[in-house]
Amino acid sequence: MLKAKKFFPLVAILLISLLARIYYVFRIKGISGGDFFDFLLITQELVSFNNPFISKRLPFYPLILIPGHLAGEPLIWAKILGITFAILSLYVFFLLGKLLKINRWALYFALATLSFQGYFFIFSLHPLTHTLFDLQVLLSLFLFYKLPASTPAYAGGGLDTRYYILFGTLLGIASMTRLEGFIVALVLLPLLFL
Picture 1: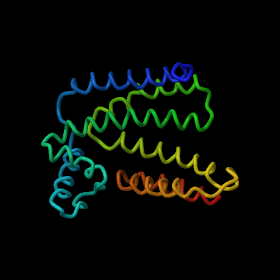
Picture 2: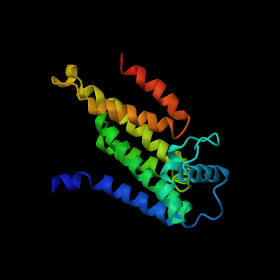
Picture 3: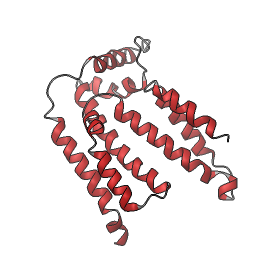
Picture 4: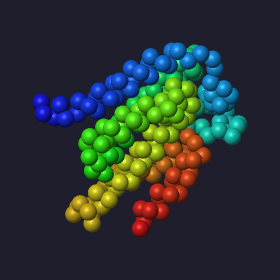
């Protein structure tokens, strides 16, 4: 019972964030611009088993648009994904803060602030790669800080290669989502060897 009370603020922030996004996503009128249509063209190429590198966009986001494309509602699917990735990003942000031993109430305040920060909120309602990339970067940082705990020097046990494999795979996927993923990989990978 005590544990449920301890995490009530986290659940409340995530739930309010989700409900606010659901409320506003249906009030946005108009189209999302050319980027989304570029992603749809790549999705069509992937479904047709053609070369997905027809534009300057990377193919991971179009890959996860395939279910919406096949269902005939890629825009709605992309908006659902954007909201889902935003809520998951907030949760991973919380986990990262706990891992870094940030004060619980300061972390709740930061989480609530991030949840309704203008750019993060608006981009989570649009069918673009922003919230997916946010989630990938936060997960990469979480694994990066989790890795030392799995090494023999810190844990006194054997090296847990699962974290390293997941970390490398995640950086690769982030690099196939947005070009900035290569920068994240170039910064984090060399730090593992220090």
